[in-house]
Image 1: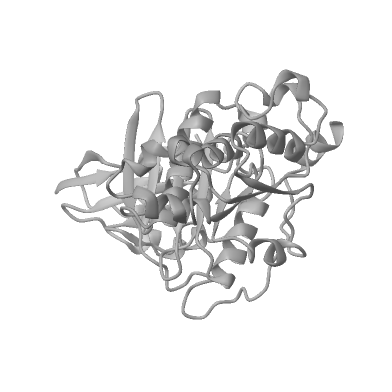
Image 2: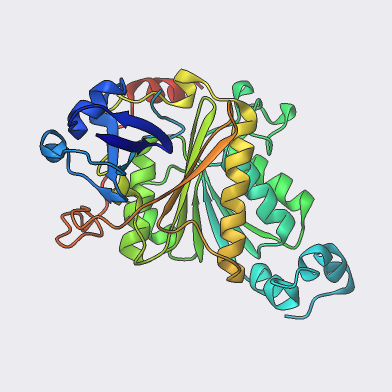
Length: 71
Length: 271
């Protein structure tokens, strides 16, 4: 399937994977509190389940940090 | 602006920089920067801006110095415990550099006073510890077309971005504040003190770069670092068309006071 980059690190794509599945695979705590960029564009939360990743995609999870943030 | 011999000497290491020079130092010396929060981030920001000779430094904070602040809020000393943070900060800034005019606001930044306060400044630094005020600073600066530096720290990590009109704003990245208590704050989860210095000095550098026009700002970029690994990343970001304050159809046209996390309010009352 290919490779994608998640927060700067390469990950193998072994099967067709949606953003929603990637969030689950990466054990993101409180996924509602994360902003997701795909190839430098923000993805709407309602599109996570229908967005399928392809070889070479770059995904960034952005976390709240406020003097507060997520693990 | 005519610098005295002492000022030429004091700012000589800036003046020596080809990109800064006397002209750049003049811009710094006539610059006005508002530091929101005299805490972990605001402390190093205010001290470096003072040392740099920023003409006017505004400091807004409604808190008093607590013993637990001193682990990272290096503008406050042990003898300052119990003193309003803005007074403690002003005293240190003046002792470091009497050239600086310090304007203090012993208050919280709210939807009522934000626009009135920020309008007097060239650049705003977010050194706050909570999301309601972070979003308030963003909205007030976007609506006023005012540049600002966002900063956040937690545990061993930090993140910062710089906003200029036309660049992505904080809400482009983070649509709205997390519900109260959904995301831990430093007072709940802790923070390595030096992280505040690492991030605060980046914010101070951005303010000085903005005033002098030197280099590229962290606009359209989110800088994040993790001090456990010392990995720094700069993530490119774009404006979001759906951003509620700077997008195509903005829904936010006036300032909002969001609810504070309950634990932070009780924490404040305790002092």
